Every structure is written in C-alpha cells, then in structure tokens.
Image (cartoon, rainbow, N blue to C red; front, side, top):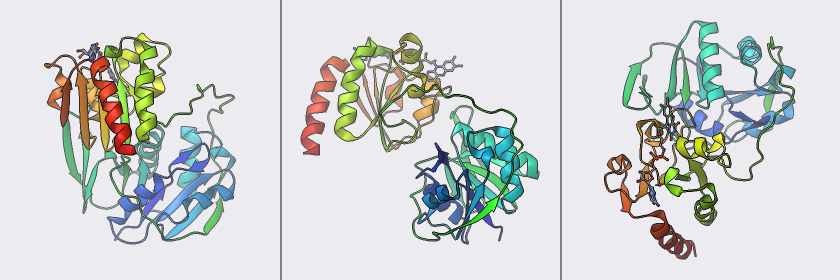
Length: 308
Ligand SMILES: Cc1cc2nc3c(=O)[nH]c(=O)nc-3n(C[C@H](O)[C@H](O)[C@H](O)COP(=O)(O)OP(=O)(O)OC[C@H]3O[C@@H](n4cnc5c(N)ncnc54)[C@H](O)[C@@H]3O)c2cc1C
C-alpha cells in the first residue's frame, strides 16, 4: 500500500478546517495519512491536531510566509515523504499539486469529487463532463472541498522539520478588499446574485438572507464586471471560484455554462428567475419563476420563521 500524505490547506498562515476533509479523502486509500503543514512558526501546525492524521509534520520555513509557487514546491519537496499526495483544490493548491507532481514525476488528478479505490472522478471541460481515471502507484490528487466529511481524532503533536525554499517572488504588500463575510468557497450555503439584481445596492437583500441562514454571498461574472462594488472574490464560475455547498441559491442569474462550471456540483440548487426559460432552471432542484422583488421577501420571511 502506498503511503498517503496530505499537504495542509493554509489560509493566512493557519491550517484551514478543510484539511480534515483532505485527511478523510486520504484515508480512502487505507492506512494513517501524514499531514504536512507548511508553516513559518511550528506552533501553526497545532491547527492540524484532531483532524484524523496518523502523524503531523510541521515543515518550517520562511519560504511559507506568502505563497510562492517555486518556493513552496521546493521547500515541500525536500521534506514531504514519498507516496500519494493529497492537496486542496483552491487555485493555489492546484498550482502546488501540479508543481509537486512535476518535481516527482507523478501523475496529477485535479479537483477530485469522488475517490473509489484507485478510481478518481473529476470534472473536465469546465464541468460539462466528468472523467474517471485509475491510478496505479503514487499520484498527486487535489480534492474539492465539501466532498468528504471531515476526519477527526488522530495525532496532535507535530514533528518539526526545518526546510528551505527557493523563493522566486516575494510579496511586498497585500491589498485585499476587507470583507467580514464568509468566503463562497468555504460556505455550506451560498446565495448568489446576477445581473438580474439590477444594481449592487440590491445585494443587501441577499446579504440579509445570508445573515439569517449563515450563507456566503456570491455573484455572477456579469454582476462583478458591471458593478465595481461587487468584488471578483464573490465571483462563482469558470473564471471565478468553484463552490460545492449543500445549498446554492441563484437569484437573477441566467445559468450560462461558465457560471454552471463553478456551482453545478452543489447538492441542491434553487433558482429564482423571472424568465421561465432561463437555462438555470434545467439544473435547479427547485425553481421559482418570479422577480426577486417578489420572491426574496417571502423566502426571507419563511427562512426567518424556520430559523426560529
Ligand atoms: C471565458 C468566459 C469566462 C466566463 N466566466 C464566468 C464565470 O466565472 N462566472 C460567471 O457567472 N460567468 C462567466 N462568464 C460569463 C457568462 O457567459 C455569462 O455572461 C454570465 O454568467 C451572465 O451573468 P448573469 O446570469 O448574471 O447575467 P444575464 O445573462 O444578464 O442574466 C440575468 C438573468 O436575470 C434574470 N432577471 C432579470 N431581472 C430579474 C428580476 N427582477 N428578478 C429575477 N430575475 C431577473 C433574467 O431573466 C436573466 O436570466 C464567462 C464568459 C466567458 C466568455
């Protein structure tokens, strides 16, 4: 049996909770996965405790301060044990997965949504089709979030290993637009607005519902491109984020193939659109043919009473 190693998903130098899902994915291959935490300070590896790992390695290096493709790949390659590597499927982690695979001469399967023995299923052609590949021997697999139920228990204390990376670019300053809201890629429920919302001010109606049910607010590319107040970080789709929530509510979104690419694997899709022929209805589990002005207040009231 090949050893499986999870590269912890990192967010602002902290172990992201989705790492426990990656451990669950790794466990499908049998055995006790090792989790490697790329960290600047070994204390950051404590975040990987109780995520189901057989062992934890704190890979410590200044190279991990900010993501640098070359720096992270070289620093990790030096200390990550041989075997099948499991990473997250964020843009950064997919980049890292490809680089580690290239360094080790391994095959890479990106954005896995199912693992059945050695058969790995992942979307291709922007989600228009699914492909299943069989791996023989070690490979690098990036796994989409919200596919596996998080693992728990297991190792707590990390082994600290120093490493150095060949950093090619160093970030001088981040100018992220501050947002208190949940990220669409991490949320279990996403409510997204499209151009049909009419103006960015109308997104407050989506935010109010999001606050009631603990959802993140997303947007179509048309909304992001049309209105400066709707940041690209909210964009769902082929050139935005891929989301995989339990519930996706699309409001005033037509359902273009590029939008579907980012959300069609959601467990339940609800669409609100005034046009009964909008393509989104072909992919929705529940469809409401109405304007959002009519539908959202009713939806919000019933959600409020459901939430008590
Ligand atoms: C290379 C490429 C990459 C792309 N990447 C992405 C991507 O990542 N994400 C993405 O979303 N798109 C992407 N697009 C754009 C995509 O093709 C569509 O143009 C876009 O998704 C349309 O957004 P929309 O549905 O909000 O707007 P529209 O197509 O304008 O649809 C608006 C919808 O709102 C409905 N509506 C209008 N008023 C109301 C109302 N009052 N109440 C209810 N419904 C109403 C209309 O019936 C309509 O269906 C990409 C395109 C290309 C070429």
